[in-house]
Length: 282
Image 1 (cartoon, rainbow, N blue to C red):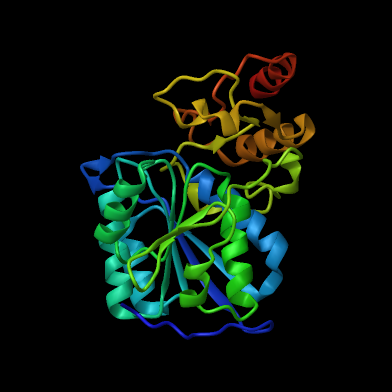
Image 2 (image 1 turned 45 degrees about the vertical axis):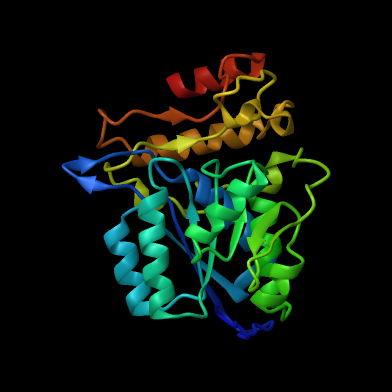
């Protein structure tokens, strides 16, 4: 077990790398812009300020090279069934280079049974903290805030923040309480599109990707948003969505064959979606 005592303080820059990694063989197995980690980084930056820097990665080779070169303090992964093993390999490599690095993972690739959770975290012993089933923006920022305030990794593992699961130095699984409510004012997450954070993924190699709403009133068991936590639908403001579409449009004119993707579970459910569709047409 690692005995991590590294401390961060206000004024000390913390380097955070986030990866939504894709296998690269012939082409790329997923060409969606990694918007999820964009929202997470954008929200965290708005709360933590310039003491923390964020870098986004989709290419595993480039992320490994950057980790070897820069030795970030925190490495985080958007974890799905299709890239969990890839994230594991990169995370273990980062841990080998620097045993003090803090590895955070989040996403639906995570069991719900307590015994299976213990096995999962034991197998992925490089993972310091796992965020499951709740909006990661708040929980991720809470972890970084604790670190910034001087809390050690070992101490945080004994009493993790809301929505965070971890395994402490004794193999005990500890879980933070479930958050009491979701984000309702979605615009509290600054747009990673309008800030330019997603510009590296507007080169024609990725499909522009955004949310206009989050949540779903249905309860399909195959879908993570079928969970009761997401049964209310909250949206970003229509004016913001229009600005994001305009931002995409002016930067993708040289790539007319690249589709626009919207991650809403039920686009077309609300009257506002017609206004968004008209903005897309424009």
